[in-house]
Image (cartoon, rainbow over all chains, first blue to last red; front, side, top):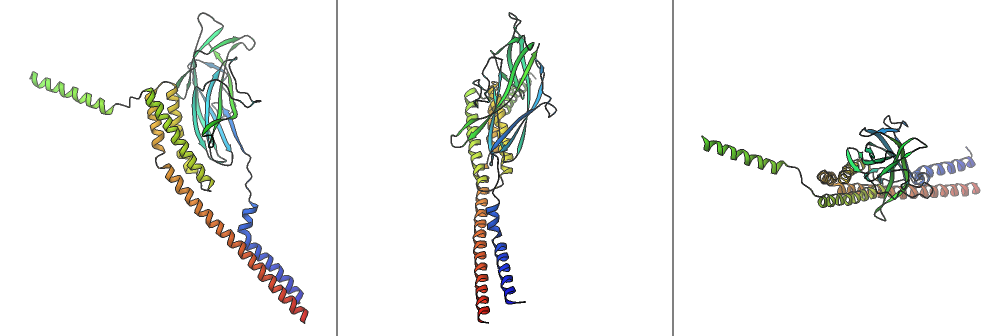
Length: 199
Length: 154
């Protein structure tokens, strides 16, 4: 082997060895975590798919599943506000990223680790009756969430002649805890179901 | 006979009252339920903050999240019970949430310290690897220079 070849071999061995020894440091530089900072929110019906209740009866239970997936890059503390409204009451606005003005009927709080999903089973039933003085109006009494009876009185639902029915909107707004503000903030996400309250 | 019967009846009454007093559930009013819920909320926030810090330090917080979710579940029940004017259940669930989080912060702190220690070890490893790499490069270049000079002489 000539001296020139020795020199080349020496350079190659030096570079390879130094790279091997430096690999822990290189690994830290190369492995930059790629995270899309968002939270997924979805709702499923009783069969864990998109078969949702539509024609509902008073007193009957409807199992729902709310799924939350955390892609925020750290664990997160969430709150779901359960709300119910008629056709004219305040709704969450996807364009302005604002929640509904209506007060929450009840809250469901939970934590989700980073890149983890959580399924929240929520059983819903409704108590309502037809207004005896006005047959075109339904008087809502309670929304029962996981066995807890939450009053929605005096919400009334007017007969919808176009869709032919009394339509109520059950929706779940997602709120997230902000450490800095030490308060929950609306996460600009909600899932909603329009329900035909049959009599 | 009648005296014995009276004593027996009184004993039964006393036993009944005592049982009712000690075995009866908590009788919570709206204020105490509200206070218990607020306290549970604050406790959950503190624990969440501790878990978040542990995660930021690089700790695996999955077991902590399970505990947090148990407590959050109880808190949700408490809030739903409160909203449905069931203050007794609200109080009990709020207390349950607090109990679930007993020792949580110290556990999170221990995890965070472990993670910090591991972080320090990683830092030392990185520094040593860079130093080692630089040393190897220097030695290699030095050897190459020496060989080069030898080559020129010959």
